[in-house]
Amino acid sequence: MKLQVTQENLNRALGSVARVANTRNTLPILANVLIKTSNNRLSLSATNLDIAITHYIGAKVSDEGSITVPARLMQDFINSLPDGVINLQLDDSKLKIKTDQYQSTVNGIAADDFPVMPAITTGESWTVSASTLKKGLQQVVFAASNDETRPVLTAVLLHTSGGELRMAATDSYRLAEKNIGKNNNDIHLLIPASAMHDLLRILGDGTDDVHITHDDQQVLFQVGDVELVTRLVDGKYPDYQKLIPTSFSTEATLKRADLVNVTKVSSLFARESAGSVTIELSEENQTLSIRSVASQLGENTAEATAKVSGEGSITLNSKYLLDALSVLSSDEVIFSFNGKLEATLLREADNKDYNHIIMPLKG
Image 1 (cartoon, one colour):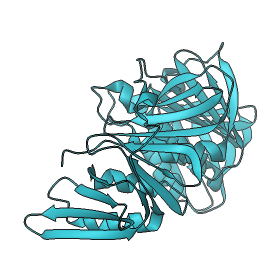
Image 2 (cartoon, rainbow, N blue to C red):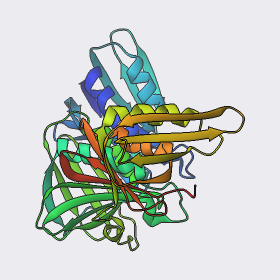
Image 3 (tube, one colour):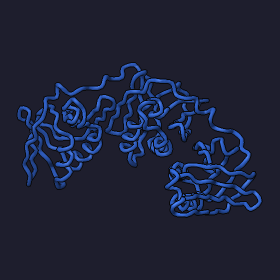
Image 4 (cartoon, rainbow, N blue to C red):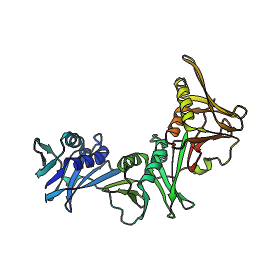
């Protein structure tokens, strides 16, 4: 293998794939990145056996070839080099890297031993706008669980319902659902949230369509010159749509910034009680107030003007409320609930495409 590539392109490709390489795995080669020439292009790939990412870049290839080298070392080294042309040459299992000022040799492992995810040969394919998918992921993926004992909840559900493509995630304490557009395919995919975090990084600020192909075991996302393939999570996802209330006895519409501010202030006094704050709506005063108590620090009540119908109070985790508010973009939000033991629904006042449910704490 012998080729020339720009530092900028090689650095960007390593940034895309190197995060997936796993130094803690029992297979040493999984800490490596596969560097391979293909049709006068260079591909860089990494995998942890559940997720694999490949990034293709342009290169001036003199001799074809392939090798795997330590991902972390390669990424840090290439990132440290100045802009310009990098010469890569393979000598047995040693990759020689040369620029005008630097000359290094990295010991590699033969590419034959690198595990390859099986190709999706008979699957469904469809597309979605990159900007739409990115927005949806930002609003949903953080609500997935980290509890590996319940693998289904560590996934993001991508499915069609009534001709609409929806994305949902829950950790059983909160639930986020986003409608990301029309789609008449029959889709029901449980995708690991870790893969969705990687996809978010790949999407960046791109405006291209994302091409998605899936079968019963895997799903492939193609974003420009980058491909991400991941195994699907096996299991039955909860029928979450039954958890979203359709009518409410108590509801407030207020400025998102106001709700963020009063929640932030109250959360400072809620650290002792695991973030617990009590929210009270007053139809008579047309206010939303948040109260938090810390036996060692004191207590706090913060109030915001709102359009309120109904009276009542509910106790929530302030972190969950702030997490939800941080992904909303409208100036006004609607905060709704039916009683202190029932789910709270938070949504944008001018957009019905996103629902965020937070389960109450026992106040």
